[in-house]
Length: 367
Image (cartoon, rainbow, N blue to C red; front, side, top):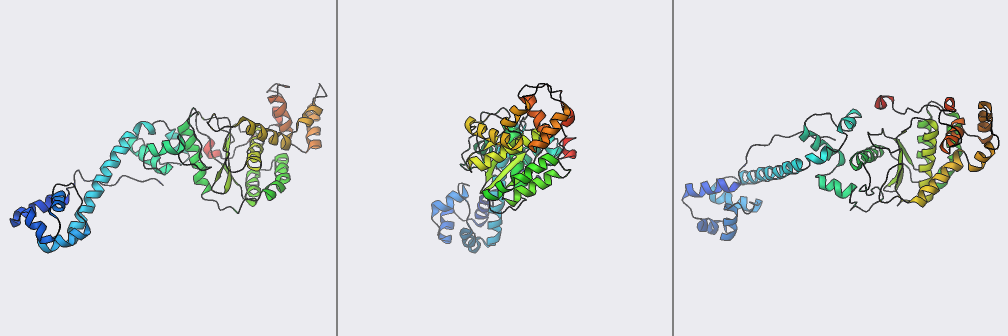
């Protein structure tokens, strides 16, 4: 939700201004006023010097002495309190202006994450609202210092683009809030892997929707969130409360990369529990090389195993038909074989392109 600026008067006076004027009009001293209201003189002086607020109890007492309705004093104090609060908030916004410049705001607006504007102050206000924080220092504590010790957050202090990464992660949180997931069931998730692999093999037009449904059946939320400029993220896994979330960018727009990333993230959920957060292709403080390797091997085992790769490599002159035949034999997609052989340096990246199928999960967002 994005908030628009509200009207703020140039100045709003403390109710003490009116009270001082009224006492002068009545020719009444502070001491006498204190006696008549039954309040200690020091309390009355503190209000008259604008060092203290006028309480509803005081307003009722003042009504009897000044003949001005209590609601007048209550409203006067409330308007002043709001005025001071908004003035302080203006200062917060001004201090956050440099922080706001670090975000790829135009791209975020393109994806309708925030409202488009060229005004620097509006951008700052919109970004604070987007993250659900009152100040940029609160954002720092959540995404850089990670003072909130929950599984949904990890320190981005070591990353090169913490602002853009945090914006992408936040969008995943907002998307996930729109989805109601059943209780996580790891047995059901493992049982759905063969159907997931079949989607990889067949690559139907609506494969992503079907994949989301298979994940959701097991209590896992699967999301696509468009990538942001200068952020090499291909995917992330984390838990929002008790629900695991896989968030993907489809960064390379090819089916071999998509499926390997998906199974890598799935591996984190099955193998590493709630506390581990995965950010693929990004340096961050909590990254665990051992866990990343375990997730890598999980993806290998469900796309094109090491043993299958060695079997293919027995033949030096592999034809396109060989790739198709091996894919059928291993129940995988030819692109998974080509992609692995390219990645491991056995063939050039220009070889086997015809087996790669494009992945474009959000044509509008990716244009």
